Length: 199
Image (cartoon, rainbow, N blue to C red; front, side, top):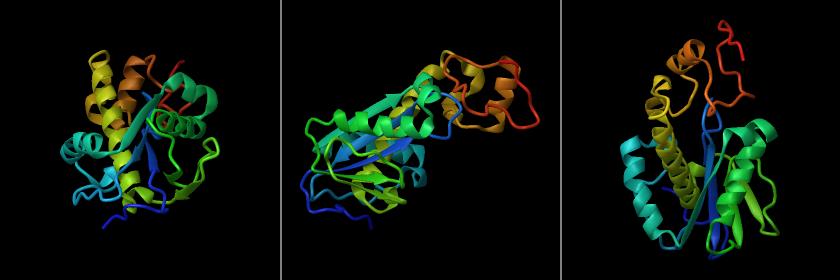
């Protein structure tokens, strides 16, 4: 059973990201402030949920949250400032997109930079411990997946509709065969060690 809040603050925000390990597309973050009495028996870390369950939860979270924000940081920025900084930037922008500034921030993982003067706590596996981080993980994942579905139409040969930009064998083989797109992260190792790509 996930815990509603880490602190006693009414406006405690959970934040998480999706897409850090992908070869293409943005890293996407969400920030969610849930009511203190929020309950949901299905909600947990998005990685433990099926796509169907994540898409089922998305409108519930968006309707019942006090506030939520979502942000993409795109591949050009990832290549410029590196994926860790881009992930933290996406979380900061998603918090900016909340209608109210949180009083406390809980972050999935162990890396974060202070947001304004708001106190924060990093929590390893926080998305499987706290409801607001789990909700943020679901929104980050679903919003990013919908974006990858959209750009799949432009470049169907990479099968982003299925792999969402992650480094599957088929995705790497498509990069080997067709080269890279404007959506690929050039700072990432796009091919397996035994494959070569002329950039």
